[in-house]
Image 1 (tube, helix red, strand yellow):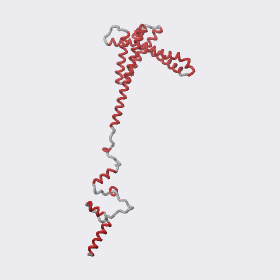
Image 2: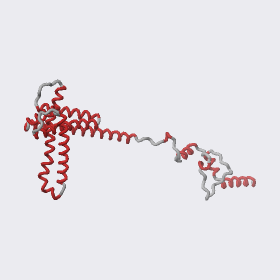
Image 3: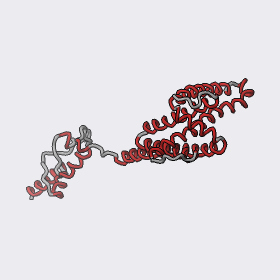
Image 4: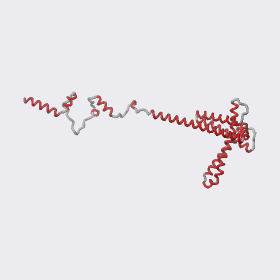
Length: 273
C-alpha cells in the first residue's frame, strides 16, 4: 500500500512539473520529458530564427509567406498597369484627331473666305480682277518679286501701326487712322490673292483639258478648291507638307499683290518678264 501511494505521488509530481505532457497526450504527440517550461524573462525562440522547423507544414508556410522577400524574383515583379498605357495611347490618338480636325477646319474657313472674296471681286471690280489675273499669267516671276517687297513693306507698316496704337498719348489721336491702316494692307493682299486664283484656276482647267475660257468666278472657285484639296491632303499626311502647300498659296497671293501694285501705279502692264 505504501509503495502504491509513493508511485502515485511520483506520477503526480511529474505532471505538475511538466504540464505539457497532458497537452501532448491530448494532441497525440510525443513530448520530450526533459523539456521544461520557458523562463518568464526569456522569450520563446522563433522557428525561423533558431533554424528549426515547425511540426505543422501549414504553419511553416504561413510564417514564410509573412516574411517579405528582400530580392524578389523576376516573376514576382508588380503587374504592368495596362489601363494607364491604354489611356495614354487613346489620349495621344484623340489629340492627333483634334489637330487633324483643326487643320481641316482652318482650310475650310479659308475656302469660304476666298469664295466670299471672289463674289465681291466679281461684283465690285470685275475688270480689275481680270487685269490682275492676266498680268500674273504673263509676268508671274516679276509680280512675285514685287509682291515680296511690297508685302515686307506692308508688314513694317502694320508693326509701326501697332506700336503707335499702344502709346497712350498718341493712341487717342491715331486710333481712327490706325484702324484704316490696319485693314488697308489686308484688303489689298486679299484682292491680289483672289485675282491670282483666276490664274491658278486656268492652270487647273488646262490640266483637265478645259481649254475654253471660263467665267472669272468659276476659274477663281476652281483655283480655291484645288488649293483646298491639296492643303487638306498634304496636311493629312504631315503637318509640314500642309504648311508647304499653304506656302505655295501665299506665293500666289504675293503674285497677285505685285500685279495689283503694278497695275495701280500704271507702269509695265503687258510687259514680259
